[in-house]
Length: 260
Image (cartoon, rainbow, N blue to C red; front, side, top):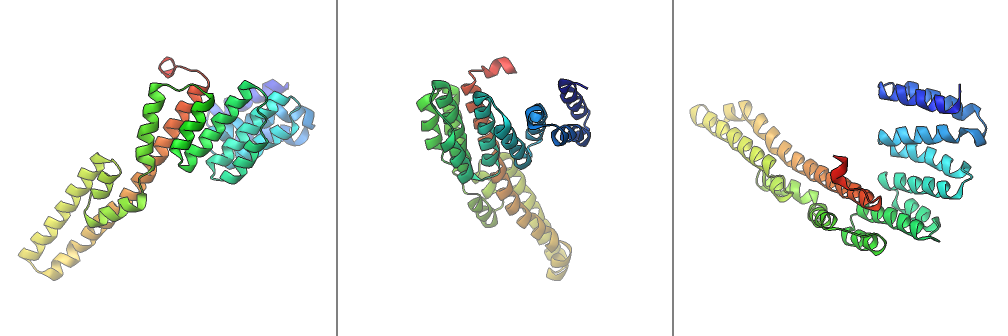
């Protein structure tokens, strides 16, 4: 079977949901073939793992591709993807060392390096530095700058504060992190639980209220605080991913409206 036929077969299995079968085909080729022949399969497996957001394993295969690739420009692309995977798993120091090795002897390579350095700074939470680094080499636009401002507001929120505020008053933590819908839901639900507790106490006794409604009040009160922290973290991750996508699109000079 020809090399490109193997990668096509692996993609077909992936599209059908047979990820393990796809990986098995590629892994066999990687294991048995000489370095000069295995590159397409290494790259394909790295791509599929990247789609699956298995950044650690994907980075491992991009590193192999980087090491065995003989074309200097293509090798730099693989080097950049190794850096990206380290960024996504939080290994920022390693990513910085890889970026430091990346050449910038041409305008295009300088732009590429600026992109990945911007993504690194973004994931570290340095929004202003990310903006400055990106716009030094790559043209910005109003949409991107608006996204920078929105992301800055979200990322600089402290999720521990969101949890604390929800302990002080149910829904306040969600309101702090900008999750207004869940703030109303949490406040309403806790008011209902507290009202049922009070009603049971008035009509029966404190012991009955504590036994019947106490666990529910405690569950929704503490659960709301934990959910406030979780929602804050999720909103941060979503904001960073959204801005990261816009940075890449701007780097590629792709009009997002044409992609939809």
